[in-house]
Length: 102
Image (cartoon, rainbow, N blue to C red; front, side, top):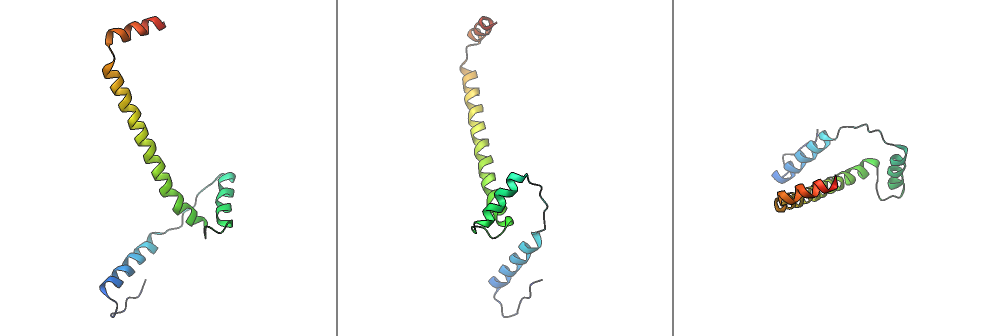
């Protein structure tokens, strides 16, 4: 637990509280990686750009979130285009096209 001195300002005390909560929430996590991913992770640390594997993961996960959000937006866009196309489709002509393909 962090010690708070009575001379600390309210802002300092808030920072201490947030830091303590952050430290408490960082529990060890065991993850299984393929050899290729493990080598990639090790290489990122070996280059010196990252201090630890945890640092690599902390930077990578937000990027993964962004990528997944972009995929969802693209999927939604494709679905909207399909819906628009279906709305404009003449039901009689669609049946005729389907019959010709058989």
